[in-house]
Image (tube, rainbow, N blue to C red; front, side):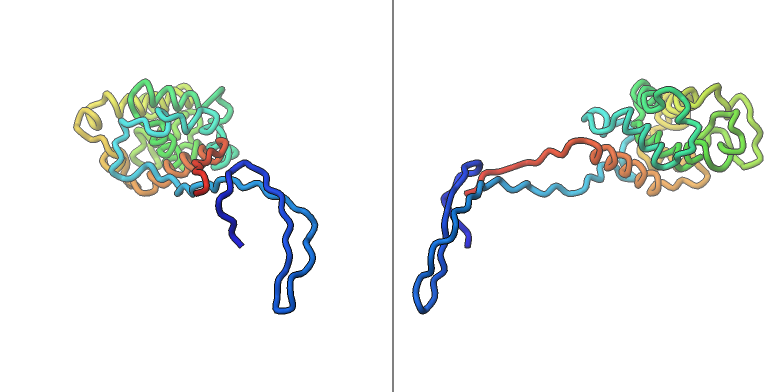
Length: 219
């Protein structure tokens, strides 16, 4: 049976007895219970969508996604990624995004889609180019050159963020959303796939954080 009029956090001691048509039975042994407020369920977060403006730093301005989260996300998605050999790759992604006003989760998702963090496609066959972003690679046979190659992985992430923010084809052309930028950036835009990866990173970062419950007292 439900008991009303109790206070959360207070321990109550009780004994019970059974009652039927014959009469009331003996009291039970003493037991105790301490009522606690019930957590309010929180829906899974999906903060990004195809029309998300990547100039917004959601996930980073609110402290959800850290550099360590990005590094571990790369490790989970592509354990053999050569990017993991670069010191604090998560910070390199965040610095590139924040310094250019490009949401870092978009950069991480692009690196996943285009070269699976250096383990697939052109990025894997041309490791000397340090290009897991698909930047300046219009076809699989494109050779490494000054446009599509960088000295290290962090440099390429910074270059892509800079081109999106300051080059003539994206922000400067009024293209700000995931769908708009992917439409210009890639031969196969895959904006919904990019958004799914962005949301996966956000959810992964949330899981790695201590859970905080919103509580309310019993009435």
